[in-house]
Length: 277
Image (tube, rainbow, N blue to C red; front, top):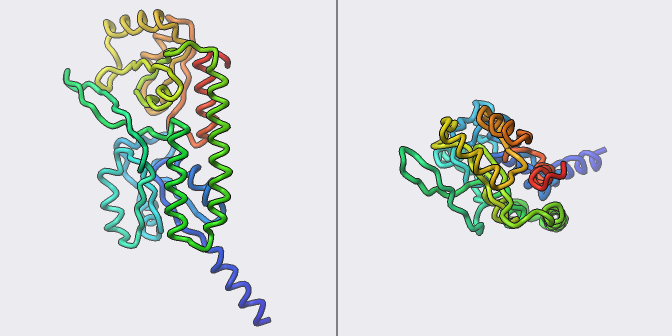
C-alpha cells in the first residue's frame, strides 16, 4: 500500500504542469503544440477583445500570481502590463517569443502625419512561427529539463506542420498574379502579404471609417486591382467594407488575426484571395 502511495505521489510530481500565460489565442496554440500535456496555458486577450488596449480581469491577474512563464509576442498592451505582471509575481519568467523575427514597419496616419510603427502581427507569416516555436521550446526546456525530449519531439512535429501549411498556402495562391491585392480595414496582414507576394489595401483612414471622397477613391483602386476579397475584423465596423463590397460584387469576410484556429484561418484567407472559396 505504501509503495502505491509513493508511486502516486512520484507520478503527480513528475507530471506537474508548468503554468503558462500568453497574450493571444494563436500563441496558446503554439505553446500547447510544443508543451502538450506538460503545460496549462491561460490567454490574456479573450475573443472579441483588442490587444491594443486590453486590461486583464481579476481572474487573469490571479493566474499571473501562480504563473511560471509568460510568453510575450510584442502586442501593444504588453508595453504597459508586463512590468505590472512581474511586480505581481517576481518569480514569473517573461520570455519574448518574437526574438529573432525581422519586424516590418506598419505605416499609420495620425493628424496628417505618418507614424512608422513596428507591426506586431508576426504570427501571420508561418515561417515566423517557426522562430516563435523555437523560442518557446528553448524556454520550456530551461524551466522543465526533465521533459526536454518530449518538447523536442513535439517541436519537430509542429515545425513539419508549419512547413506543410506554408506549402499548402503557396499551392492555393500559385495561379494568383504577383502582388494580387486584397482589402482589409486595419492593416494587420502585412507579414502574410509579404511572405506570399501579395498587397493589402487598407480601408481605414487614421484609424477611422473613410469619408465619401476617400471611399470613392478606394472603390476605384479596388476595381483597378481586381480585388477578390475584403476582410473585416470583428472588433471593427464593417460599414465601409460593405459599401465597397457591394460596388465590387464581392463578399466581406469576417476574420481576425487573433483566431485560435490559426492554420485554418490562413488557409481560408488564401482561398478567398485566390477566389477559390
